[in-house]
Length: 358
Image 1 (cartoon, rainbow, N blue to C red):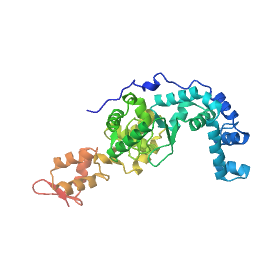
Image 2: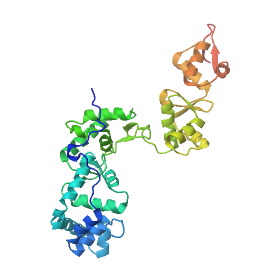
Image 3: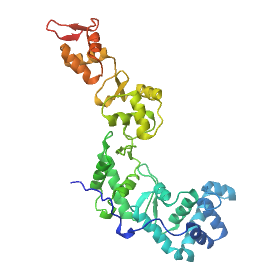
């Protein structure tokens, strides 16, 4: 039986850990004060620690000083080592421990963007924390890959298990499968082998899921492969798809536009919504202004085409059988169906009262 995530558990190591209490400006200033002017300037430019938050590239600094990119990289590496060897760095151990505890409290591994935005709301402060993460010996950064976003962790064993679980979870999903949040949590937990039970809470599971580029969620908190039609939401068409899928039955284009505005707080003009529904093959016109999803089995075409398709598939049928079959895939009145059925150019009535294609 799938395990349920604990809504309140947190890592024993970080119980009660909140945002670091130290003042990052003063700490960074002390760490930089003990290295040479040249190396200090390189770190200041690289990490955006000066008057501007802009972080300069190796090439830009090299051009500024007329030295190679590689030489700048060497100076930066030496500067970081100099910081780590300083007395100020040793004195800052309690601050680095606080930062480590904070990362533990967030799950031990999380996307770089999530980590930095959680630590600070402004770019300058985020730059200071980025610098502290780089110089701190307890923190490990993994670069962005095809499968995962850039991330930081404090425990290599946990990080490997989370990576493996995310890869397995992705493989278990079909291209179009959509799961509720509780369902994706349950499936993810079955893939997380031997991970500390204290990490198994909903907020941490969300952060871990956010590490993957291949798994995503939509505004309705449904999860699946990031490429799944119900997960990617890039415009009115995608929001319309979610609206109609959520409704579970055909909708008028006006209602679709209103639902987009109400559910997603997105401005959706009625005419624009109608145009998008007409142009996208995922939607089928099944009645006057009514649209359904093609994946439900609805086929495009006028009523005459629908009758022809039914007769080709099922053979000769009675009038009532045809009415029933057409109304399974079209929201039209009986008279509209009968007018088309009685067109001798396309359909013929047999002696036994059944209809066939002419």
